[in-house]
Length: 182
Image (cartoon, rainbow, N blue to C red; front, side, top):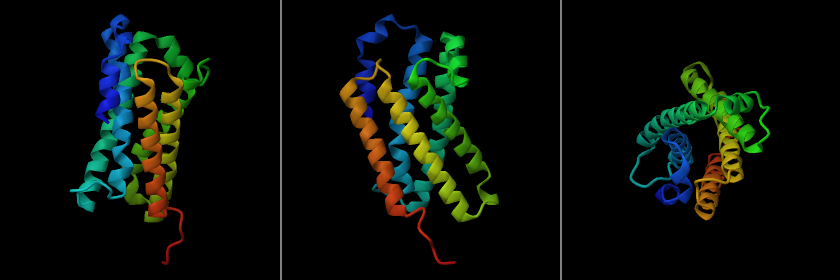
C-alpha cells in the first residue's frame, strides 16, 4: 500500500501542480490504497485481528474512505468547478471521470446503507453491501487505470490488481449470494 503512495509522491509531475490539486490527487491515492484493506478486514484475512475487531476497523476505514472521496472531489472543485460539474452530470469528455463518479455515488450509497443496517435483514444487508462494494472497487480501479498522472504506472496497476483480487476472493469465500438455511 505504501509503495504506490511513495511512487506518486516522487512523481516529477507534482512540480507544476498547485497544493490543492496535489491534495485532491493524494486523497484519491490514499483512498485507493485503503480499499485494499476493506475486503481483507471484512473477510477476516488480516492476521492479528479478531473478527469483531476487524469489522470495527472495516467501519472506521469506510468512514475514512467517504472522507477521502469528499476531499478528493472538493479539492478538484476548487481547481476546476466546470470539470467537476461535467463529471457529476456524467457529461465529462474524459471516461475516467464517469467511472469515478459512479464509484463515488456507490461509496455514498454504502455509507447510507451502513447507517440503515439495523433496519435491514442480514441477508439484504449482506447482498446490497457486497453489490455496492463490487461497484466501488470496479469503478475505482477503472477510474485509476484510465488516469495518466501522478501515480506510477506499474505500482498503480499492481495496487488495482491487488484490490480487485482481494475483493473477488473475499466475495467468493463469504458466499454472499449463497442460499442459507433459515
